[in-house]
Each structure stands twice: as C-alpha cells, then as structure tokens.
Length: 201
Image (cartoon, rainbow, N blue to C red; front, side):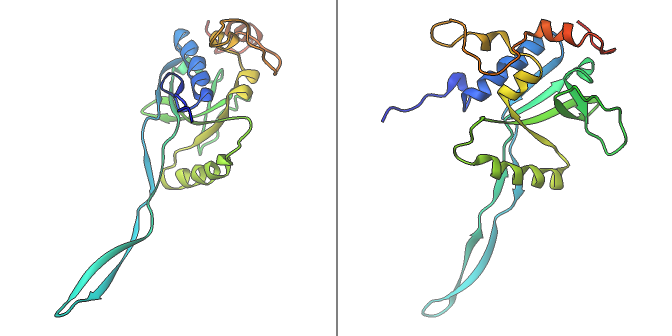
C-alpha cells in the first residue's frame, strides 16, 4: 500500500487550504501571524492504582494505569491585528460587547492581542472526529477558559472570501471546480463590506 504523504507539512488538505487563507490575510495585515499545532494541552492526567504482589519473603508494590492521560492539540492559533475586529473576528467575553455579526471567527484577548484557536474539520467527517472534538472543546474551555472553534474551510470561504491559491488546482494549475457559491476574492470581500466603519484596506 502506497504511503500517503502529508500536503506541505500539514496533516490534511483542509489544513493546507486554511493556511492559504491566513497567508492572504497576513499580506493585508489583518493577521499578524499564525501557528500550526502550536501546543498540546493535557486535559486529564493518567489515573493509577497500586497493588501489593506477594513474593517469597516480602511484598512488591506495583503501579498500574487504569485511565490513560488525555491531551488535545489545536490545528491553528491565529494572532489578529486590531483592525481585524469586526471584519474577520469578534471578541468572546463574559462582559457585554458589541456584536460583530458578520465576523466569522471568535477571538479571545491575550495580552491585548485578539487570538483565535481553531480546529479544521472536513465537510464529510468519515471518522466521526467531530463528536470527539465537541467533547474536547467543552473540556478545554472548562479547564483553561480557552475556546477552540471548529472550522470547515468551504464554509469559511463561502461566508468570507476564497483565497487566490485555492482557485487553482495543485497539479495542473487550472481553475478549480468549486461547488459552493458565491466565490469572491479578498478584494471583492472588502468592497462588499466597505460600509464597516473599521474596515481598512
């Protein structure tokens, strides 16, 4: 069986496509930087028990694990510039904040920088990983107050813009057949949303 290679260092093509989206926003100074698989967070430690095993003249204490540790690694951490607030991201806060309904991403302030943490999922989840993610998502927020947002790249592109690199295929360089609509560029997105008072081209 032929070993499947990772696309440009990513675990999936969906993650690669998302990186193209973020790189285009870096060029326009809406994203400061993004980090792929930035850290691993332990959600629960291993649970163990001890057992005394009788030997000929003494007892030996053995330790066994009955619950394995559980950890989670998000796909991307996105550091936004402040001009992205209300355009691409909205702040998640316990306090009442202005609702930017058109913004796709949720962000949390970290040292005065808006930060989004996301998990990229395919449209068709053949391995049912979304169910596991939902549990991790709740667990992560309960333990760390860190919100991780599920992102499906086609939904993201449809609701905001489609990156230029995604519009052409990887092998032939021809126009990609895109099933969703509308398909608009970043510049067209800016024009469409030019009434937003904090939009800066």
